[in-house]
Image 1 (cartoon, rainbow, N blue to C red):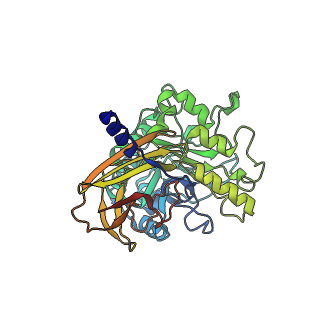
Image 2: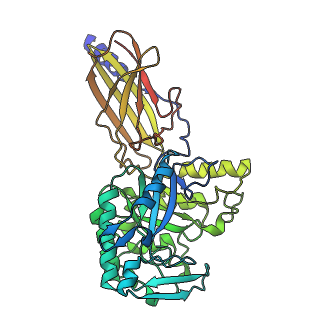
Length: 443
């Protein structure tokens, strides 16, 4: 009987206390809406986007000018945000973006007028030219050598090929890059970027007429017609829609979001009324429906730049919150005895996607005066925690460095970028922003 009582007491003492849920903020890092750099100053966000013509960054076969990128990242990081960018060789309605040294070498450029939704003059280089192909792979290698793992960079969209760097030359299919060129570009990105995610425009499996397969590559995807041509409709003319292509690409593409991020751009036609009720999206392409279907983490969006009514703003913030991860510390137990601190906690992902970065988790002891007097870095991971899943964390450490007194144990995930916004949990945070109180203990 005494043995049974001791077991019951031990079980009771190991019960973790539940922690209250509260929605995480819409400007959590590495997720949400990404306006163009310097815009949307009134709307909460942690990402900012910009395009660059290749000619501004590449001055010779193996020489580069990184100052345009550096200036952008300095500006974006000064606002606590991280950068998403794309480098292009052609942009409808803008001047030729091919580096001058390639033009001097004789790389052919075709000038033509688009007659589709976005009418304008385009300058398409000859993607088959070996000089251009070598320049592109050299550039990608140099870009990765300098910026892979740079905490100022959140995501890179592959770019370089096609109108706007969106990997198509519609309707001029005769100008589009061959599968061999696409394969070279994708291979160069995979080789150059081991940490910073790179995203492709179109999911593709084997046997596609125009695109080299990418379904098994370590590259994510971005849907640049989000909430307009995202969800599959089954109609023959809608086969280019993002999820229609994803399904044709097969299970490896459909499951890509589990390990590689999904991003994109909210289609410009929806910007004016996206946050109305009902919104201006076509039937079946409703914003939240597309978020759930794609597991999108971030989206370029200029709808948040315009003046929103309070009701529209609330809906936009709810949309930003729904993108990507949302972590809730569901319960925690903190116990100090025999000079040892024991911590147990459970984290749940309530979002639609994992957190793809490997950021450290930090614990801190806060004394009665409100000062952090000791910190620890347990081997706890947030990345790869799928939606709806939970993860149990355990940690032990000695308390010899602490003086006698009462303490609170806090948890946070600091942003590795200096001045970057910390990852905040879906918990009520009575302490400093970004910290969650797990419990109290005495020494």
